[in-house]
Length: 270
Image: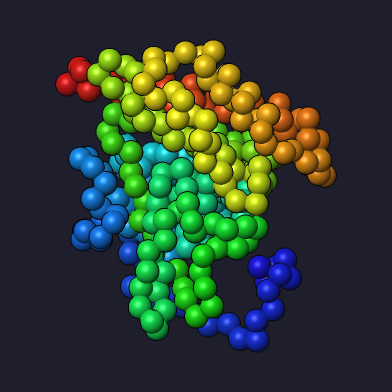
């Protein structure tokens, strides 16, 4: 915000010494309304000061955090990820950024604190507009809780950008859970770079209870782009963005489904 001259505070407070904001690991305590989300639910607790590079390396070590690792490799460059914080990216709320998109898609929870106490805000209510969040004056983001996909849940992340390190033209993240009959049991898809906040795609719920079909994925992609508004800007025309979005939605759905099938086969082998 300072670099873009959107904020001009009279004073800056260095919070890097607050070790309580640098926690990273599985959620150890049950917070009301967060941990009780069904069997197999697990959450990753990420302090606001955790560096993006630190989370990237941590997420590489476990299969259930692979989607987080994949998305983080698209964030800027290793040099910027060494200094950039997870909390800073979420509070900045750039609608084209990877971490806000992933936080929304996974169904995260923001923990916000002030002298009045602590409150929880679901990712769906956290992002409110361009560079605007639910954080009120006198409050600060202290940590976030990220819902992790269950072991057999398929996941995928895809992004289009002109050059490595550029902001995304469009990005998408998806998780899919299949039932024992290979019908879609649960699906969640988020898009970044299309509006003033990252978006959840409601139309994908139509896949629940159905067997997978590429034609259905393409039809849903078409329905989504038909209801969205696309604008021309210095990076791309509206028609180019529309075509890109259609391809991206169908592609990320297909990739998540294929990942779910691969995990199902792997679990059967064991």
